[in-house]
Image 1: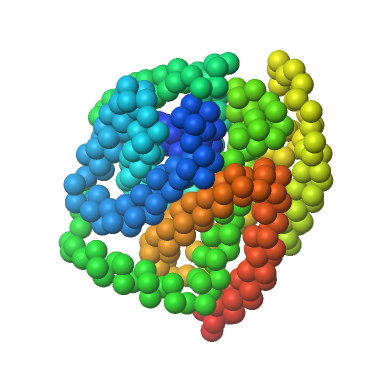
Image 2: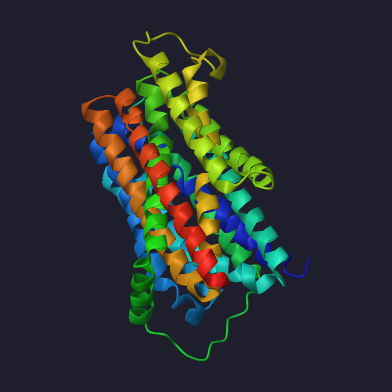
Length: 411
């Protein structure tokens, strides 16, 4: 393949950041055990990750082409490598905050750069879609791998800091990724006119005033609120509610990531035969049913000896399957939204998607953390039923607005 080295570099970057970004649930559990912080304090790690993604992705969108894709990627990787090496040396909760803030900033640069490079190395829409799906698929492989990598460094002593040594491995992996970037032939893009960041920001705000976009961003916000609330706190739920050892609690959380991956692959086939609105409503009903079925099974569980994955209670396998149901929602509403807009509006729309997704993820993790801390783990997960109802309402409004806008464009 003509651009094999570029594709390999992009894939390595996405794989690496999948591990780093989605380790936040595991790190929250370990921070509670190792640094004796409250669940509410530990939940702030989600914000240190997501808020920089939202801010930096918007600010750097027009700046990256000016410095070149290779230099942008290397800067992001260098920042992460330094923080990965410093974190186990410092061995403090504030160092984890700094690490996730750095990872968030770096991923914003990586995502903007990778999406731009995909257009550079593909020749048509079919090739673009194929490569983008492959890269996103590798992201899910990284998520799955991350749970097992972190679990391998978690020992039996809950308050031990030995698990921080995982960042030495991730730092080394970052340096290997940087070498792949250096060896990849990335062309610096040509542009004739620089658009001020102020104009891009104003354009994005004007786009947000459209009724269709307002309904969409609310749908996206509520979805990510659920996904991050459940995904981030599932390791802690497994450990403190289901009484599982930390390593097994983390390993079982990988079912959630696998369910998301499988759910999106299945949805791609189902959408050839089923209207998106019907499929997403079926998914919401399935999500609510799974919560209402599983959580009563977690009440008053007595601690017992758990030596392997096969000793875990049935609820530990059922709860992560919510990912199978929620998987199609986010990509489908993104696709419907972008298809309803003029191509010139796709870039500012992508900015809005990133911003509201990051805000939804932070809000979901914080709310779940507070409820988990002061009311209980079961109640924290029961709380997800509220945004599910909210999504059902916004999907109805979204469908009507999308149909109206499509009809207007056809006239």
